[in-house]
Length: 205
Image 1 (cartoon, rainbow, N blue to C red):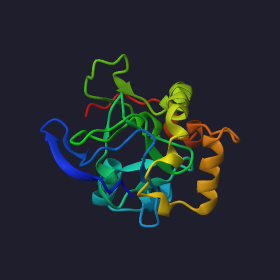
Image 2: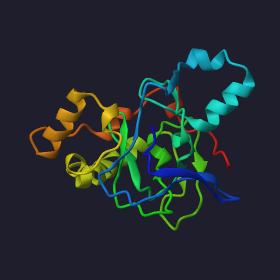
Image 3: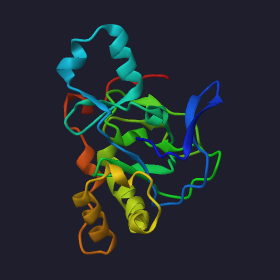
Image 4: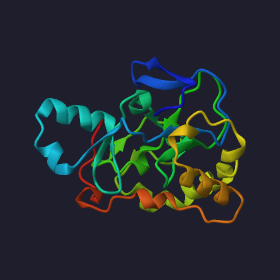
């Protein structure tokens, strides 16, 4: 489930639609949580589907560490890629804002940690990275872990509209990590080490 202080908005002809903040979302806010309405499909289920459904999953789903495709039921599936994303996923089936997000600003993810099956060239943002690869998690997990650790301790002290989607055990673990009593699991936990981690020919999108 995507953060409630967001809306779907047309961004540009090049980008299409994206998820935009309607109010200020401070760093450390939980911006998305995997919930009971999100659908998960195995590789076999995907292969057995008609092409029209496969195309939808190719466009809007991400691959988890089991190699299954996850389709968000709400606007979470419209969150766009950025090489300098303001949100990062965690090893705990939720994402957090790694810096303040202001009203009208897009919520963005780095698709490098979504176990994409094929590399693609992103929009040029002036960053050194220009292409997203299936194995980017292996390359950049330390960088992403450091960004998460800078704001993870803010989670318990902020208003968290999505907290109700987390179990009590999960919240207790978050609190212990924020206090320094427990080590945060690495984002590398999300990596799917399957056949898709090979680097096929570049796809232009």
